[in-house]
Amino acid sequence: MIDVRLLRQDPGGTRAALMRRGDAAVGEAVDAVLELDRRWRALVSETEGLKAERNAATEEVARRKRAKEPADELLASLKVSADRVKGLDTETKALEAELHETLLRIPNIPHPDTPTGPAEANRVLRACGEVPAFAFTPKPHWELGQTLGILDLQRGVKLSGSGFPVFTGAGARLVRALANFMLDLHTVTHGYVEVSPPYLVTRATLTGTGQLPKFEDDLYGLPTDDLFLIPTAEVPVTNLHRDELLEAGVLPLAYVAYTPCFRREAGAAGKDTRGLLRVHQFDKVEVVRLCRPDESAGEHELITAHAEEVLKRLELPYRVLELASGDTGFSAARTYDLEVWSAGVGAWLECSSASTFTDFQARRASLRFRPAPGAKPEFVHTLNASGVALPRTIAALLENNQAADGSVRLPKALVPYFGADRLLPQ
Image 1 (cartoon, one colour):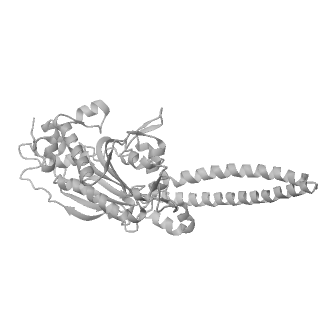
Image 2 (cartoon, helix red, strand yellow; image 1 turned 45 degrees about the vertical axis):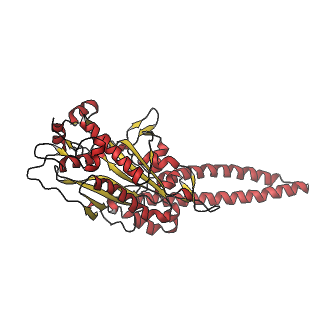
Image 3 (cartoon, one colour; image 1 turned 60 degrees about the vertical axis):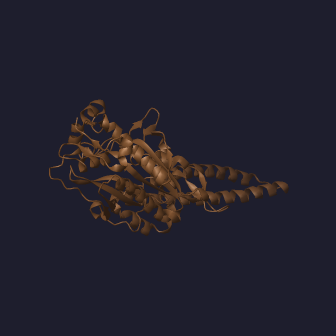
């Protein structure tokens, strides 16, 4: 969450920065926070004043008793003020809880260098690789997957409904090969520590990374246990050190995890629903970094480069977009999207988002570090990137590397993991 002191000290500037997101509801939430904070500080001030008066009155009662002077009137007033202080404490705690809950619904402040505007203001930073040209009309991946016998969408619908694909035979092996390739790249070459986290997490865990309370409708929940299926490995991995005070010497911390991800994505029905373009369950390799605030900008470039390296080794043409303020996710301050070209659908497909969250998630998760021995604790900065998501990566691999006979060439980096250099029609 954002620091409420920013709103106190510069309400106009902070509001203007938040309003770059283009969401009128953010302005309303800011107004609510400022009013709640004003009332909370007034209650705290009144409570502290009464407690100071009570301390003075208590000392006077003690003096009078020592001097054998009457103190009944003061004792009676102390009883009244005690009841008032108790009531104020109750009001203060309730108001503090309401203030905290309202702050949780305010998004992160966009980075000053983030372009202002909606998705149309996203800007391409760079592109890598050549978009393939074909002497025939390239097929979309859902047709190729059926011809190759690696993707069974119809049986996925039978089992779980739309958005739950089934990979079969060489398709299942391809998923496994991609995951192992990415994990080896990130652990051996990039130095990440591999984590295998739970797939079910608590409300506190999802609140720490910003999915709750705002996006509960997008999550798959288990009401009986009040647990949720993870929408991304970012959630459990970022929360590994929740409520901890780290020593500066351990930073930066770098973790990688391969997990399934589950997203209801309420309101997304009918948008890019063919094949693997938008699914409710998918596999993803996620990289997470925790660092000192002064290292945050460099860490963002580094984590983005690590995700790009996956696409380079898979020989996929891609581009890097910097998202505009209105298209940047709730918790992120700055985001770079990696999009791969997919020849069969003729479109750029997002397969990774690399984001810096500044101290936004760390405040929610109480994730701090001590800059030096005896120094006051500070909040770490958190970052993550898909390294990368499998569905659209697989779509691009199939569509860009298809041949006229229906076979698909596999990139050299994947051959040792898959055991062959080509997928053949069944």
